[in-house]
Amino acid sequence: MVTSGGCLRILGIDPGSRVTGYGVIEKSGGRLSLVSCGVIKMQAQLSMPERLQVIYNGLSEVIRSEAPAVAAVEDVFVAVNPRSALKLGHARGAAVLAAVQHGLAVFDYTPRLVKQAVVGYGQADKGQIQQMVRVLLRLSASPSADAADALAVAICHANRSVLP
Image 1 (cartoon, one colour):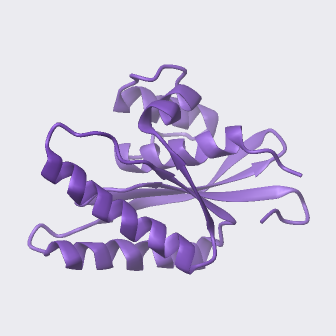
Image 2: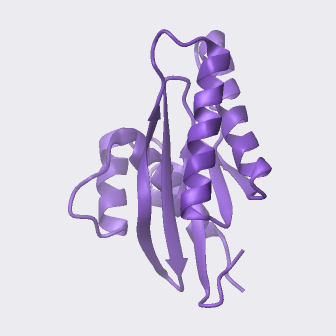
């Protein structure tokens, strides 16, 4: 899980049925650095099973190319619309399955906990998350909202985990 140099590579995932964000960071001591980030976008005409396959395949490719040691996934929030929550749960399941199938331990974090860990406020908006991710990872520009959310999940795990 931890490299010989004491680095921990963490995959953060912000699951969505239309767009799934991912972000890979490295923690070395108290320092965090960006490895990669992006989004997996689903075409609107795809059925739900096809979207789940796209999520699984996309995250599998990220895991193979970036070799994270663990995955941190944003947990499902209680949505006003039960159908939306169910779709989000399916997307989250595909993301967790991709991580587990590649031998990664998976850690779950609520949206509120992620926001508190990154911004210091559990009701932070997407713009505040993007700004703090940019600052914490010393980036020249803010990543997209979905990629920033995924990086925030990874940062949350990095700040809550203890390296041996």
